[in-house]
Image 1: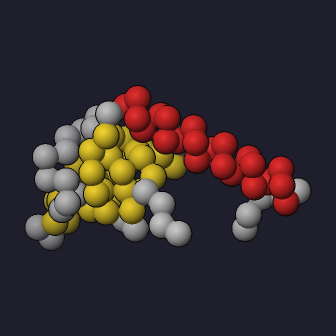
Image 2: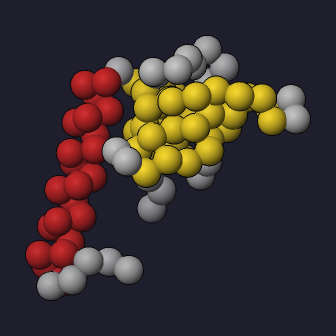
Length: 85
């Protein structure tokens, strides 16, 4: 299974000619490639899959998706009695 996680772009910079961004995923920050979303700007929410921002989404959709992902994690922990590793 492959998941795309929404995050908010905090900063955009160039890395050897490649457009990169620091993206915040609710407190966790990661470097992400913006080659698939060249129009993304600071403050934009993007869906990130394996280190690439693959599409832009609005803030409401990003929050809904994060809520679902958090609920899934809670459901797995409830079912198994412990979180997934």
